[in-house]
Length: 261
Ligand code: SF4
Image (cartoon, rainbow, N blue to C red; front, side, top):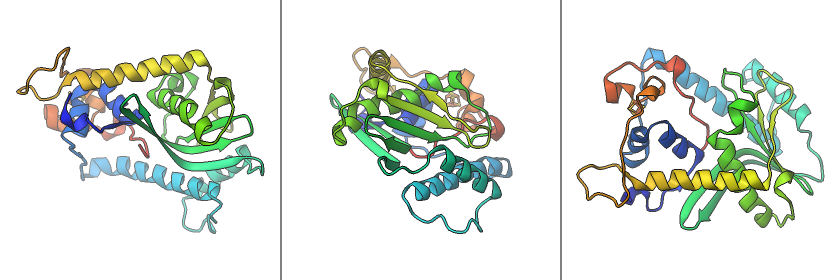
């Protein structure tokens, strides 16, 4: 295993990066290259990312019971979005609201982490909320099997009941993706023990592959090592396209970065 992975904390973003292209994982997490262009074409892309972060901050303030002020300095669409969220998730006295909630977990020596936009704890329920501000409309099929769902639900099941002393079943956990630009209702993912076991296996398989990959070819081969590969099908969605292939990066189709982990 590469020594940079010794204390590595696996997140949905890092596993997704490996899934999309192992070489991209090497650039981002082994070589720690932070590729950010500063040209005119990329401005809209980074502006949209900033917009997403600002909206997440506004939601964090609301669910932390911090005044969100007069709305004078926020984009007008944020006012509509936050009002929709207030209606959808009214603050109730017997529930606990945990915005920007971060979890870490040691799974047999591998560290996992997740950062949730909002966790709502009821007496016998856990709701995980995720705000999506991207311009592509999501549906159940888009989100049911994505690594974010896998990681967030797995960690919620493993850790939240223990931390908060709750006695709940897997069926009491739900994940809700909400796109205020499009919807009045969230896309809701349900959970059960079978999904939990599958999620655990998926995470373990990816972590084992990441650890077995030979990122530096001149080093001693790793037993059962995997050759570092490039996924050419992903290049047009990748910020390293210029570095890898000398080709321009098309920001309009670049994968969205996820805010947080
Ligand atoms: S440009 Fe293509 S091969 Fe290079 S890291 Fe990105 S996806 Fe992988």
